[in-house]
Image (tube, rainbow, N blue to C red; front, side):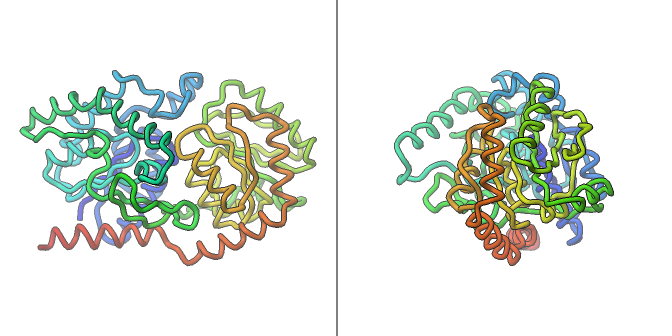
Length: 400
């Protein structure tokens, strides 16, 4: 089977889809990944065909971090959203012509229409259940907020998408959100950490988080640092926008002094500069599955992929969320007893990070719960479950 994975988003949206592509290729399927250009090297690690499609999300965040007030989707103007959607509808069918299935992830409002132009099935993949909407049991405020967001996207995008669909003799859509999510959403996150709820607005099947196995070992300097004293604490905020790198460098040094903890700091998309301190190590991209088991705790932005990797390592965690799923993940961390309550990323200070670290490394309940979750997750293979779902549904259809 020939499959196209079309993604527009940050690394958190792309990496699990690369893991899925890797698994599908190993099962004998042909896969093309269409994603922002900064992901070509990642796709190259699994020898997957890659087409740079859509703008560079990394470049946008680095060039204008102040604009990223609430995440990539929130920061898009209606004009930018329409341009992205138009390109997905008009350009994508030529790029992926001949595929049997289209999988979408991230901001792909036009990809379902592109799949219909090609007359092939479409499935949307998510990594956090909040996209599925609310239930009738949710607070009125939550239901109203979701309804407002759904109405807003219809106001700006429904007529625009339908004009494009008319050009291809496709029937008009009634709801943009429903069209975007499609027939049966694949929820690729762990039930043990964040279970999708029955009664939400859209049909779904939950599989589990799709981990991308590391292709390389930890760098020697990281191994040496980890082995030269008590287990360090990792701090990383992924693709979160950071305006003043110097400010954060000072915060991290103050955190080290306040906690007496050795720190490994991820440079992330902020490109934080190196430090001369012997007890602070700044690193580029790291294989989490190899690094996290060597740590005492992780302080981070609350991204779903990082959360899954920490949980599998069996160590406490604390999240300072900035956008989207990160807020929901923080709630789950506290609810499951994996780490302390924290403030939002925008309100983060030396004191709040230091307090979170101290609680993570001294609270035996957090450690116990983290180990318990880790043991439960060892029996779950989200990647294999997702592949089984895809093969069961679509190979059976195409062979009929």
